[in-house]
Length: 322
Image 1 (tube, helix red, strand yellow):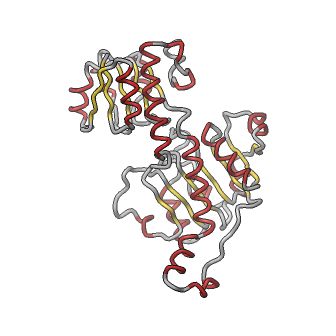
Image 2: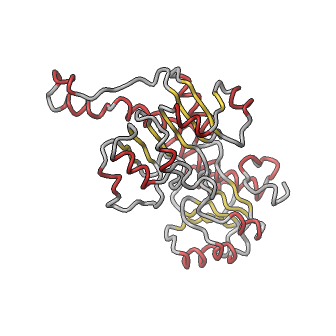
Image 3: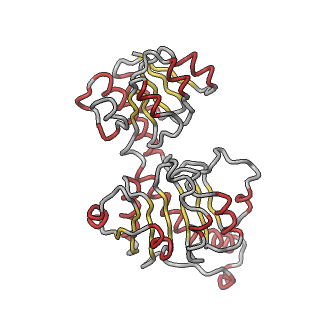
């Protein structure tokens, strides 16, 4: 059987597919015409970030599974996969720890302003440390987590280690589950009012687009820090820029943007109270190995040994009647 790897993945994924007897090849040109031409006879696709359109899926007559190298799947249409009886796998277990660590790194960077201390010291101004702006502790602060899936839970564990109070808003998770994790369930507006730190772990959908916008920002304390490692568009970027520019919140960290890559003249780039990264919160070496392996396993088990398949990774299992 033939497997296309669309985008760069760690060799551990390649090795696993090859060891299991699959014919594998890589596609680096993500132009739609090229994808239609090269994917039409594949049995499976291991997919990074390239966009797989309905037209591409409809031309893949042998396609049985697409396995995402990650957890989001907004670069393809789940309805089209269902109509064509194609399974969609995700790497649900792989990236939670890496993203959670990135969130805590962002909290600490923006709270401690450690880069300013580093700069002052390297410039020979050691004795002028009193000129530095105030910096703060995470201890006993209020953390608000939107979305309590695997990543949200890992973030909560780490925040609790700093003896913070962790509040969670997720209408799809029961209060019992949240409380069992030593966190406090809360309504969105109530959480916004008390939050010192906000971290977002929601999928992008019609319901979550602009989930935090001008009205929500008006509720926040001036000391609040907002972090988004989920998807661009969940936070309204124009509204975020306005509150950051006018120092209405302390700071923000974005690993994701409404348009990726963002325009080189994006106004938010000029601000000093924002920390930016190129959608790589999950891309530690350890995580890249795990994602490549788990994505490959989804394909292998779906095509050769369904008893070993992790059904939690199969997004459309109900539609496929698993």
